[in-house]
Image (cartoon, rainbow, N blue to C red; front, side, top):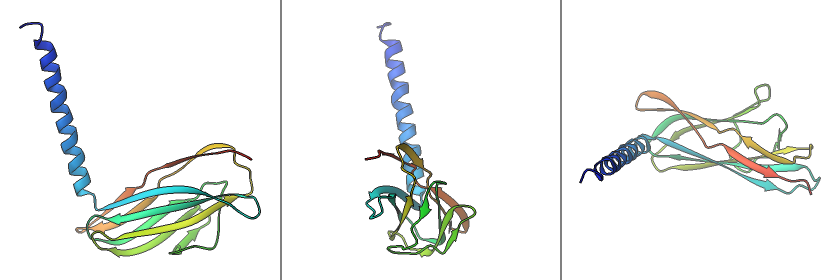
Length: 157
């Protein structure tokens, strides 16, 4: 049937394209050696300042060495100096970055880094926090990976 030929051909092309995309995605995921997820939750303060807790979950998919985690601090925020868990190795005030040296992570190992940002300026509306960066060594080469970016909406009570 001549009328079904173009439809069948385009649907075959679509199926082949989807299969190729799935293969590429699976290959990239299986080659990933480190995964970072960034999340955010609001924090109540006694003083009424606007504060948020940043949480970074780092998971090693394969053994990685010399893992360094770097996260940026937005201009309007300050870092609360008390840390729940792992303290940063370095707080670079000039570049507005926090650095953690995590060392070696074995396959399947997970670590969580958490810190609080606050501001005395009332925040109304939404903002986006940049993704964190991890630099690591695996299989004799240095690589880097970025976490997700976080969008957050707030309102003044």
